Image 1 (cartoon, protein in one colour):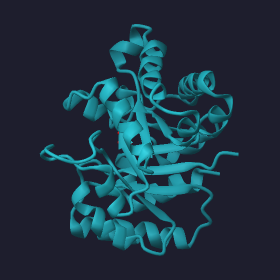
Image 2 (cartoon, rainbow, N blue to C red):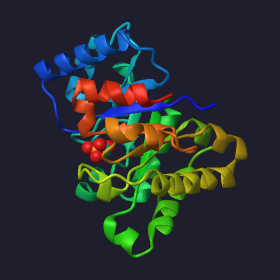
Image 3 (cartoon, helix red, strand yellow):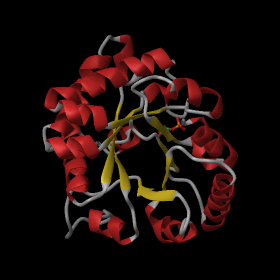
Length: 251
Ligand code: PGA
């Protein structure tokens, strides 16, 4: 049985004061409810130390939002896997559609980041997803297959079992439009099938989460689907009550 993962993606939001209040809210909520899911917050890099400290002795796990595909050296502005590990990061998002769209990240760059992270002991949350134009053009399966296969070909079977895949239809991110559970399940099943082509056991183990306007009122229906193993949550992860309600919906 795969354990659900509820991951908050704070994006470029937060401040020292805001983060302190948000983490305190999540911590106090979690102390009053039984949690069946892994709970993760992916925070902006400058706040890793603050949040590492704020989540001590709680069930919250720390993650980052991006990482370099290089180990160290002359890469101004980049952050390495070993730097993330220094702050206790266990996960890192790679290939978010905002990075693909605004920072020119190709499938090859995303694959290299994912491979680099898993080899360094940090679990990459590999984001894939089609745009609205691609969906309307009947390209969804081709786009998703291309995106995930680029990553899988750089991983061993064991590494493929340990990554997290996030299906995030681009048209659903931050728009309030959510994929229906059926639409999401169809793509999640495709993703699991791509992993199965590599290794059947890895396909059973790999966690595939959904992202794109996941909220308290749609989380449970989405996560009831057999291949949806949790959520990558943007907007609703910035409100403690909403984030807690989504965690509660993961059974
Ligand atoms: P959203 O963002 O929940 O605000 O749609 C999800 C994401 O981009 O990871």
